[in-house]
Amino acid sequence: MRSLVVPIFAFSFVVFVSAAVHAQEPAAAETFLRSRQDAARGEAAVAQRRARLTEALGALLDYTELSRRALGEHEARATPAQRTEFVNLLRQLVERSYQKNLESTATYEVRYVGATAAGGAVTVRTIAKSRTNGRAPEVSIDYTLHQVGGEWRVFDIATDGVSLVRNYRAQFHRLVSRDGFDALLAKMRERLANEGDL
Image (cartoon, rainbow, N blue to C red; front, side):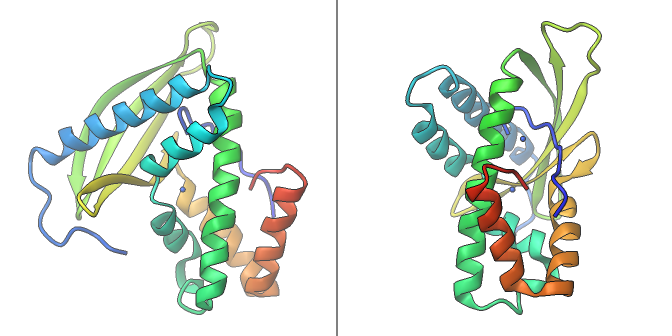
């Protein structure tokens, strides 16, 4: 499985709300994202940041929805035990990736440039720019959120137009189609044991 390089700032993972997204929900989703991002960035500076970062990410990301969308057609064919393990492994890999990206991008400034609602979800658009390297290009990062139990959760992140879900889905589809679902789980366990990212 090829490693993805997806720079995520304050991140680097179906049940949609059946009611129509109201006009005020994009602003509420952006407010949610700002507060969770700020909390995660703040945790990067403290000694016990891993446990706190895990907690902050748990309040930010919908790992179940991210997993469901990343597996695509293979999700329905997996056993309940396989799905549970997959979500857990993906969560650990995302947390590791987030931790690395958070440390390497601590000097980036994030601007929120708008939010739009479509199909029961809200996409919050941001631009990240290095404060220390003026020549580094800006990076656009779009977070797609939905509500779960009345709380906003992110289920996809697109960096410069490249969707995390679509990248994962392409990788997972190739591996599962060729070698089966257990091979995917084994590869994910191997990545965790070897300190690798997806």
